Image (cartoon, rainbow, N blue to C red; front, side):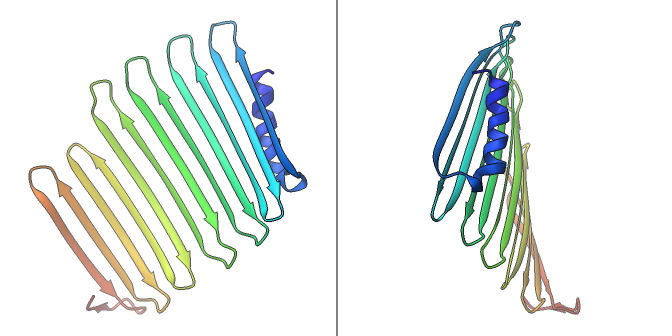
Amino acid sequence: MHASIVSLSLACLIVSLPAMAGAHHRAGTHRTADGSLSHARATSVAGPKGHAAHGSRATLDSDGTLTRRSGSRVQGTNGGTWQAGHGVQRNPDGSTQAGYTASGQGAVGGSFSSQGSRTRTADGQGAASRQTTMSGARGSYAGSSSRGGGTLDHQSTLTGADGNTYQGQTRYTKGQGVSHSGSCTNAQGQTIQC
């Protein structure tokens, strides 16, 4: 089966999943005229408690570049959902780039989302970052992290249902240790004790 057809079927599986019952699977491999090789597959499962679908595609280009992408989605009959995607590319010189995203919605209204990326150069130098948010009846959270050059930084904000907020920053530097600072405010923006 042509890889592009499998990729199209993946999209159709995710979109039309609720109408399906049982398990379904498609897979195929395709080689292009320039020597690139691709393999794609898609799987879906549906039952009395919900639906799930996953698809992936891996491509090896003629120059040696390897790329892989995947995505998943789950939906429960109670209304909860979860979905995620991931991609990574490895280049002929050994460098890599990767990224991911994920999000979900709870049956009672809570939600979360997260995304991140990482890179590595041909000489082994790495860097990464991540952002996450969550919210629910008891409050919300937002955080971000970054790493690179021997330093790790993290920032976070937590807000309670009463409107009180905590904001904090933490940094680790190789050879120097950890530093941290934080502050709290009430719903009116006034500084309060943490």
